[in-house]
Length: 380
Image 1 (cartoon, one colour):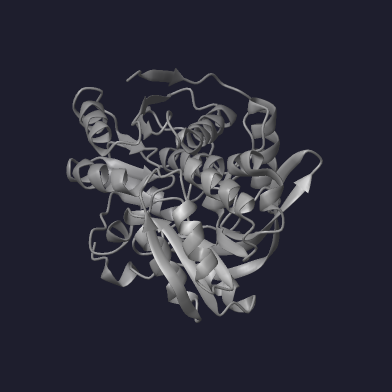
Image 2 (cartoon, rainbow, N blue to C red):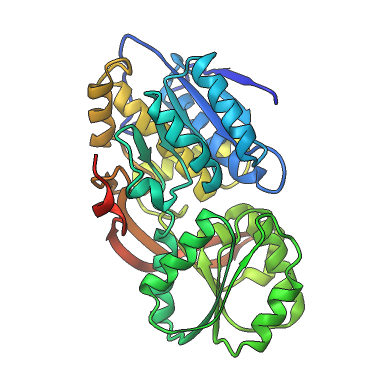
């Protein structure tokens, strides 16, 4: 494992609702995936987070970044070191829900704040919620719930459902079925990290399905989409943005064109913060941002908005500042529900090609002001 400490220099501040600083700096521990099939997700979260700090001129925010290698035991080791040796104030960065479940409960029990830029497993939204845990992305079920709502509007009556066998995968199918009103042609959980989907595609072909809902992020999604296109099965696909992420689309190509997917963010959302973010991200990194990059960016700006109001050492004041979410999100309207998970619109996107680049455009709203199904179980 290699530690990268970033002391960010001051660039021109932009009006993104996260300016100013208190007398004390903040030390952030970022545990994320920077190697293997899920590396693109962690890199985008890291880069989005870094960009927000640069744009705000947050030179007194120190960020320690380490690669969890997508392994829960490694993530736990890193978290212990960051808390006990590095003495970080805030933890962030985890992509995968099984890693979040291994790290977050212990971190908040030790009095640390955890700001999630991605993973939102249902136990942490419900009975396992905590006053120092904030999810800045979504609760795991949300984008899948929106996919179910879209499937109804598209007239699908018999969906085949496919997801990996880990907490986010079970949340995915649970979320889809919460809003989808049709029948299930099949329900299959695959291995996490699986890259050969021949058997599952054969099941889809024989199932009589009129649609396929799938959640396969990172390299899993690339492998499935390529194999699905090569199979000749022409049953329509629908899924969350994780399976149609900016990085996945470039690897999959034409096979993804026209597919509808759901997301709380897209590069064409018409608000000043998002326009500034997309432009700055392309200038800084030479590529279009993904939803993961937008989540990292929003997470950093939430942190900065709280820092502008309170010292992190005053936990009650800092927590109240986080709860206020007084920053300009790339999503536009943003607020936390009572369990510190977002209440936000979730959109339907369509995969298109702009020049030589595969990307998404917003074509509708699937769910408005959606919170989550677990908030009533949260007793803080």
